[in-house]
Image (cartoon, rainbow, N blue to C red):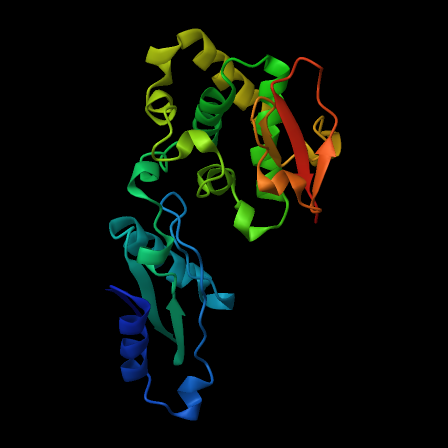
Length: 246
């Protein structure tokens, strides 16, 4: 038997769980919790040993119907009681509303938007370097940099074109109407980088950060001991590139 319930928050889910499980050693010894960060395009899936195939279908269905809420699945299978709870608060993990519109983008479209907003006037080579920063952040194992392409790009206050008051934000909403030629190039480069990029053959040498050379005052992070200045792809680049230390 699989019972699926959706609760508004973790406290309500936990209270229901405590009511459901009678506290006997036979049951409480089998209770387990699985926490997963919810992502709209990657519905929370409860997984645990032999029960995964029985529970995951229900989890997918509930997550799809109620994407913004907390997902809790109570499962009793063959006498073994298990608790699965997505304990990430929707209120805490939800992105700002101006970024939510990008959550349905494919990685290619989102990366292309970022390139358009950050580097549409740059050379193809420099666009490739900037694209690699998002990929390298997603690969570097640092949760604060994001663990997926989407997370690394939409991470708060990282790529300025996604900032709420940045003049480039409305432009990346509809790049085709702003500069069709530049948009097509950004889209092409995004696709090529995603398809052929490899940590072993990274032309940027692991670049994760950059800033324009024309800034009157370089950002404070550029002076950090954790940042290593990297060789630029050419003397004509508009940006300086850095790699964040492990």
